Image (cartoon, rainbow, N blue to C red; front, side, top):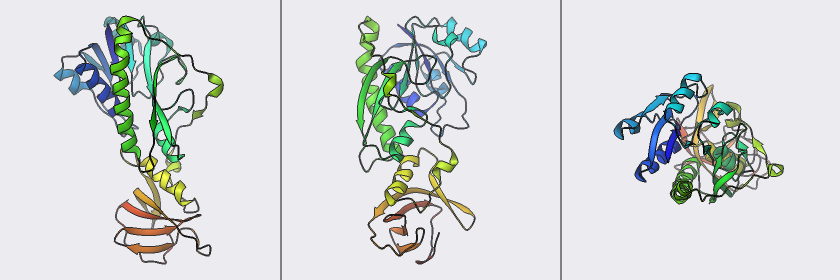
Amino acid sequence: MKILFIGAVKFSEECLKKLIDLGVNVVGVCTLKESAFNSDHRNLSKICKVNNISHIYSPKINSVENLNWIRSKTPDIIFCFGWSRLLKSDLLSIPRMGVLGFHPAALPKNRGRHPLIWALVLGLNKTASTFFFMDEYADSGDILSQKIVIINDDDNAQSLYNKIIRTATKQIEEFLPKLFSGTYAKMRQDHRKANEWRKRTKRDGIIDWRMSAISIHNLVRGLSKPYVGAHFEYEGKEIKVWETEVVVCGKKNIEPGKIIGNDKSGLVIKTGHNAVRLLHTEPDLKISRGVSL
């Protein structure tokens, strides 16, 4: 079975390494030299060169030039893992077995953009690692493999990302023999159960101290590295917040945004409900108690 691989993020890199370790026939790789919007971007050309795999940079994945290059590799199946652009019908129809995509959510629920970020920001206690056969719509094709991934209270974006990688690479090892032998099964999605998460913007990362402490804490978890970080402004400067903890505060006569504590562990800020301690900011903040942010 000949596999063509499409990807350009850290997850793509780990999956490609897994395929190489398993000794499958990767006949070509489409990747990106750079990305303006993927903070976890990976250029897969180095792996390709080390392993003597043909590759091409594909900023326009559906272009005639790109399609011709993919056709020349005569793939039986395409793996598209970690790619933010929709594949059109001309590309999807090239391999006889179709195009296998990936989405880190429990499809048909939570289709769309930024699934790891939204899962944490919304305080979900579980998500999933889902491989599915792609169609012309986002995340709506038949499911090949899905495994639940538990989200713990102390998970952040990096730890959840790592859980997804570990789960997904195990799934690849499990379903590859079935793909080779043609004994795999597909499960149709129930579109009535579907919802779609929207693309986040920079405004979604702004900390509003009127939010509850747990909502701010979850926002920080969701946007922590490798992503862009939650933030607020102080004296005209953008302050990134990478780590927080919720602090119980029953006082109702303190306005949100006021600093109510300042020690070695960090500033404690009153919020709409309870308070948050800023454990890691960039830059570090040295502000007196009683000041309002």
